[in-house]
Every structure is written in C-alpha cells, then in structure tokens.
Length: 159
Image (cartoon, rainbow, N blue to C red):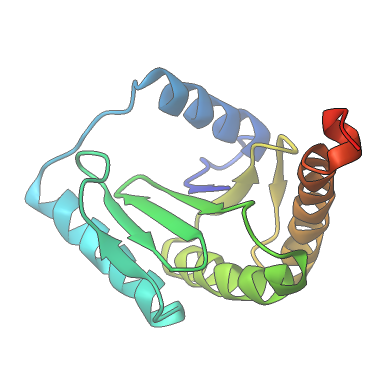
C-alpha cells in the first residue's frame, strides 16, 4: 500500500498508479533538504508511536527511512509518500493481529499528513480505518491461500 498526497479533484487511482510506476522505474526524486529530512523523521516517529515494534533498518533506499517489525511489517518513509508492506511468509491465524497493527500505523500517517491510501494490488484507493483493513486483509488471505496451495505436495506433482 502507498500513502500519498492527492491534489484536490485528482483521482487516487491515477495518483497511486503514477507513483507506483515511478517507484518501479526508480524515477523518484530524492529530496535531501533539511526540511525533507525533518519530515521523514517526524513521520517515522509517528509510525513508531503507532506501533512500537517498528525498528529503523539500516541499508534502506537512499533518502528514505525504513522501519520493520520482526513479524514482517515494513514501512518505508519518504517525505512525499509512505510505502506499507506485510510479508506473506506468515501463519494466516496471526494475519488479523498483524493487519490491525499495520493499519494503526496507516491511520496515524494519514491523520498526520492528510494523505490518501492506494492499494496497488487492487488498483484503488482504500480507507485508512476498519473498512480498509478488512478489505485488504481479505485480499491478503486469499493470496496467502493461493501461495500456500502452491507449496502443498499435490501442487508440486508429488505424492
């Protein structure tokens, strides 16, 4: 998921897709100004206040702050957007608790910035609250079921 500013009158889908294309292509401006550094630090503090298990990671993308939790939640902070990820390598039984924590962070960032949230998997905007969490969790669990099925012996062609 991405949190990003969306100009008045613009569609979240267009803004989110445009940012996603720039991220994939490596075409995102790296603002190293003192104001940008301060903004990233403030957003990182907001994320950590929402979930204290997030810890700053070394070796992240230049000009961004990378935070991660041991259970696979990842938050990458730029002064102009935030990327949220959650690892698929998890037990489906703990996914609901992980998504609850992730969406506390998403909600805190959105509350702080006024930005909107875009889900690249569904190519649409999502709410930063319970409705968005429930919809995103449902998609996550369906993908997780598909991934897990691929690792079962029958799926690999062996008995």
